[in-house]
Length: 121
Image 1 (cartoon, rainbow, N blue to C red):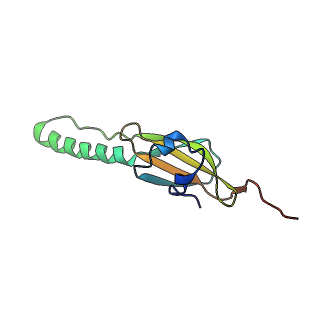
Image 2 (cartoon, rainbow, N blue to C red; image 1 turned 60 degrees about the vertical axis):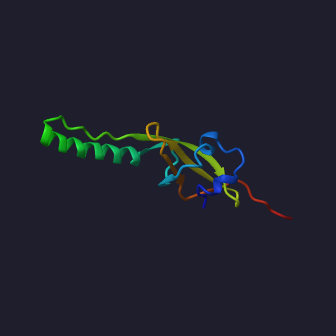
Image 3 (cartoon, rainbow, N blue to C red; image 1 turned 120 degrees about the vertical axis):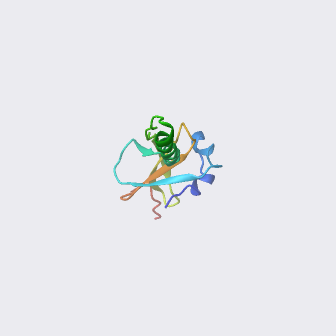
């Protein structure tokens, strides 16, 4: 199965993917449906927002400041087609967060399509 380490040596790798190999990628999961794009919740922004909310709750209790609301940021992940060594078509979904530069990816789950096969006579 294809993973982010398999992409290091791929030809025609999209530049937005190649630029993010120095950061850790967060695997969202396998997608069974044939969708063009998907969205994921950014865990990095969610943790920062939860910490800010906790600080806001403490501040409002002691200093009468308004509570900071929890904001959820979503990452839009575009679909890219890749081929494995066995000539199986696999769609990868990839996106980065605009706020914290978190990298998220998912892959298509089974059933898979075979791109081509070699038949010898």
